Amino acid sequence: MTYLTPHLPFPPSSSSLPPPGSHLIVSDTIASPGHFAIYHLVSSALGKEKKKVIWVDFRNEGRSSWESILKKLGTPLPPTTSQSFIHIAPTSLPTFIPTTNKNSPRIFDGNGSPTLKETYNSIISQLTEGNLVIIDGLSELNWMGVSAMEIGKFVRALLSKVRNTNSILVSTLHADHLPLSSTTSSSRDDGESELLDRLLRVGNVWWRISHLPSGRSGDVMGEISSHLLSTPPGLPNTKFQNVPRSNPLQYRIESSTVRVFAKGTGRGFL
Image 1 (cartoon, rainbow, N blue to C red):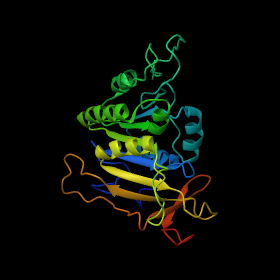
Image 2: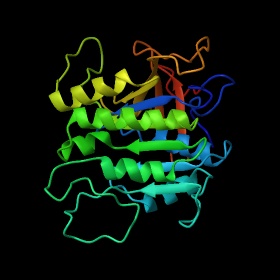
Image 3: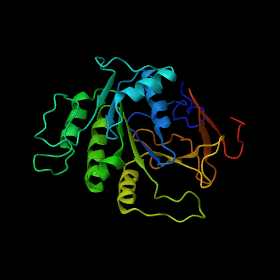
Image 4: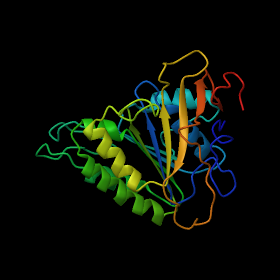
């Protein structure tokens, strides 16, 4: 079930996924996680679009939670032996602790210095034509000690490979430092701010998910807006859906779906 598509479609024909060669940035806040947006994209890719998904799990969330949730959404994950869903789980374990999982690249080298070379190579070894690549949890990677500059270089290099294979790149991070409204000031965090700034420079579309300034209610759990940053290569005259921060969509997460509606309409779903 692709519950966001009617509200946040992608060109050229109201697709549930961004165009090939594009980079979608999904930011959220700790109070309003953006997992539901990623589940929507994965469900669309594995279901209707029949695309291979490469999930790079920097959050260390694990496959089991995804299996349970996507089953409820009607798109069960393929078996672990399938090549249509690749779970790459980078590890922060030191090099002297052995690992037998080829899809668990090291985040730190033998000297204890952060590096994303192994992770990059692991992704590239799995990348084929027309994939959906999700690098999930870049803020958590930053918290581990990988600089925003190195993360930015990693994303830029990966995006080049993604575009060469007509694939799609999705990056996720937290943006709690951003103001929730024009009347609130930014609680600036240098790490978060620099990381988001670097990603926005190489992004095409930005989904900004945040909680309400007044807090979560029974009807509304958060807001989502959509912003075109730059037109993806090959689509110079294509119209993208724009949802401004001044008039965002609101959502409520339910047991087997997400309800999305216009701001202020409460239960009056679109």
